[in-house]
Image (cartoon, rainbow, N blue to C red; front, side, top):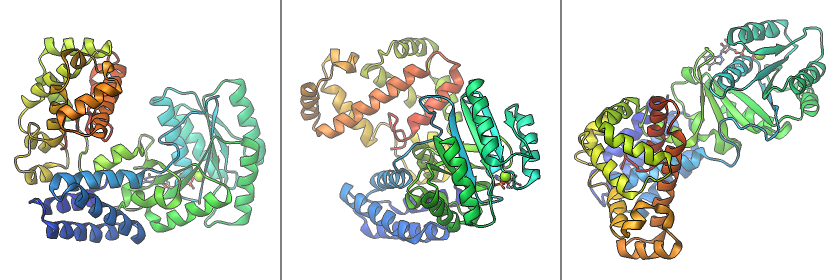
Length: 451
Ligand code: GDP
Ligand code: MG
């Protein structure tokens, strides 16, 4: 997805070998600067991002772990702007979505992809409205797409956009649809007539979301037009299409920040399943080469003995997964081999594994911290994290030689992971387990295996 950028992050991380080697840090920053600019990330974004990464690394203490941490946090911050993430349903159905953008950007295709995503993954009842009546071929294109994916279409070549939208919304309300996607007309460039038409459609449909569909191949221009659409009609999200054809990938990095509206989805090909949610945590992991860890998840499941796994899964289901269980889990993960070999199984990470040297789970800073915390807990607290009131947390922090913020962070991560595990337990095991592993590998998860 971000091969070139991932490669250069990998190289930059590889430059830092020793502690306190500030020269190596500045070489790493230089390397990043070159490749970010080459990948078409806006120069101002590059400047701020790198200044923040450098400052944070120095603040934490120059070293590979801290550099990686700074990278991860700063990229995540860059990708995150206030607003919704992924697809968000309105509190009262139907959720009405207006698809806007220039001609050829991929609006119609993306409308189909979104409908497919909502139908297949979210099990929703979706209605598409063909409000691009500029070209008759556009309606025909939607007929074919909706027939293929089995989604209902409201279309009438002889109607006006506003009328067809009215008709669509009436149908959606009457027949209890969950989502209405309105495909609108584009132009080769922004003009007043287009904006007027969009404005009328917006007024009549009162949408929950206005997505701006932008072609990644147009680079920084995609961002400029998104800004114009934001100004003129207001947008709540951007979808970047044709990302499969953009070998640079940098537009996706700065877009949310530059436009001030979150990037919500990325189009990765011409087919209906080729649409991915743009979730900052996961994207950060991919950028840093964490990739897909399905194999790792399978191996993990295989390594945990069945009896123990059953015991854990029952505890998870009851929400009774405690710190002792966690330590036992760590022991079984250790049975899998060194961190280095585990990381090597992750697609795209073999290079990093080579550079990681002998970094292992046992000696990771995060795990040491958690172990210190656990050893400061009473047996009851170890069994039941819910017991941890503020005064107990303070006691644990001072006992473990940590500050309270660190303790709170670890407990929060632990709580999130336990909650997630509980939610995921039960339903079709493997698939859910894999998703969970992916999340745990990611920013909000616990433990952070990458460290
Ligand atoms: P619209 O004019 O904005 O409605 O654009 P269309 O949906 O008709 O798409 C224009 C062209 O871009 C079509 O040939 C699509 O197949 C193609 N397209 C759309 N999204 C993607 C994508 O994510 N990747 C690739 N490779 N092609 C895409
Ligand atoms: Mg179209």
